[in-house]
Length: 77
Image 1 (cartoon, one colour):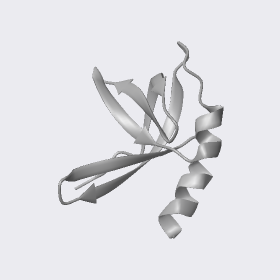
Image 2 (cartoon, helix red, strand yellow; image 1 turned 120 degrees about the vertical axis):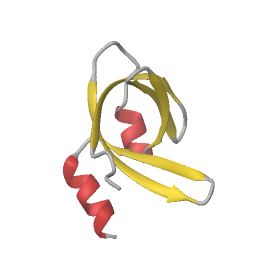
Image 3 (cartoon, one colour; image 1 turned 90 degrees about the vertical axis):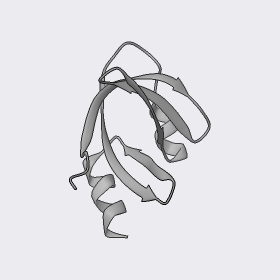
């Protein structure tokens, strides 16, 4: 199964450790580091978010990165 690599989206709502973004008409909850959360802004501008999808027994979690290099570092750990 192939996992998504990135999504171009708009941020709808920002929380302490996550944000809700809309892509293809669906709202996704994506977890971010505190540093990245501070750099997210809720506006009408689309941003590119690189995605790491973590599968669990009851579903999956999405982890987002604004920098592709940060995503690659996460995948190596």
